[in-house]
Every structure is written in structure tokens, then in C-alpha cells.
Amino acid sequence: MTDFLSSGVLAEVNVWEMVATSEPIPLAVMAFLAVFSVVSWAIIFSKWGAFRRARQHSRDFLRAFRKAPALDAVAQAAGQYKESPLSLVFDFGYSEVSRQVTTRGRLTNKTAIERTLLLGISEELAKLERNMNWLATTATVSPFIGLFGTVWGIIDAFQAIGLAGSTSMRTVAPGIAHALVATALGLFAAIPAAVFYNLFGQQIREFGARMDDFSLEFLNMTERNYEL
Image 1 (cartoon, rainbow, N blue to C red):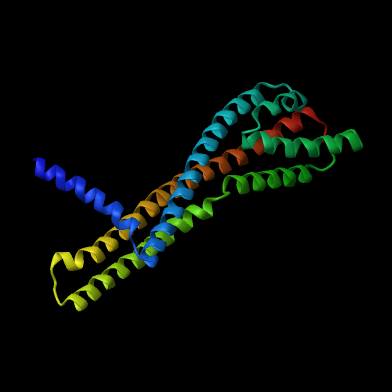
Image 2: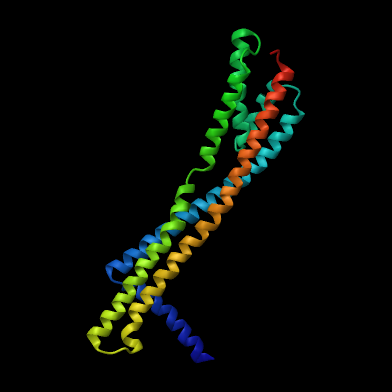
């Protein structure tokens, strides 16, 4: 048992020594994959928190909106829910309503309000989708970068065999080790990026559906509050 633990610790130390003593190309592959992984995880944690706040603020804002007697009352409270996409869509629609009422004393163009709401939805979707391309790129590209490192490690192993004229583990182990590390790093970067890209994509579609439904509620309240 002691020998097994000692060999495991030694193997772990050797992995880090291998990374530290890697040649430029394998080291560059590992560095690229590490950068992809670190940036992806930063985006994942950032979006996870942002989406959680957006859901909470959206629930609170929608509750306040449905209880409010008029758009003016909602406008006064909307500033408390800035993390909610619904609140920002409301700002777009309310600005157009205020413009028409101030100019003509009543609503004159319902179609303009609908278009303004669509612009607000489009802008909010663009914000929600920000940095999603990085996750998609990481999920797609990282395995290929890892595969390149794998192929390079195998080439090193065959070159070592040719130079040493031996197929012993001592000869081929360094090249095979580089190959396996590159494969593992590629998967470590790609799998979380792919999982959270799909998860966040589903949440963004849900936000889009909620904003579409909210725009209808906004139009209904507008018709109740103002003469068309």
C-alpha cells in the first residue's frame, strides 16, 4: 500500500515536472488550452451570477408591474430592477409612450410602440448572448488543439524510439505523457464550455419568450391607460 501511494505521489510530481520541462510546442499547446479554460470558467461564473440576478429581478419586477395601476407608477419603481431584462424593455416602451403623449396628448401610433418594444427585446438578447461565442469556440476548438498536442507527443515518442533503437517504456513514456496531458487539457476546456453553452442558451431562449410575453402585457396596460 505504501509503495502504491509513493508511486502515485511520484507520478503526480512527474506530471508537473513534465509540464515545466516541456518543449516549446507542447508547452504552447498547454498554455493555449489553459487560457481557453480559464477565460471560459470566468465567463461561466459571470453569466451564472448575472442570469440568477436577472431571474430574481424579473420575478420582482413582473409582480410590481401587474400590481401597478398605471405605467407611471411602474416607471417610478423600474429603477429598482435594473438587472431585469423586462425592466429595460419597459424603459424602451415607456419612452415611446411618453414621447407620443407629450407631443400629441394621446397615443397616435401603436405600431411605433410595438417596434420600440421589439428593439428593446433585441438589445437585451444581444446583452444576454455576450461572450457566448467564446464558449462555443472553446467547445469546438479545444479538442482539436488537444489533438494536435496528442499527435505531437506521439511523434516525439516515435522519434525517441528511432534514436534509441528501443521500445522500452523509458524511451516512449515522455512523448506518450505529453500526448495524454494534451488530450486531458483539451477535454477539460471543451466539456464545461459545451455544457454551459447549451445551458445558458436555453436560459436565453426562456428570457426571450418572457420578454415577448411582457411586451403584450405592456401593450394591454398602455391601451387601458391611454386613449388610442
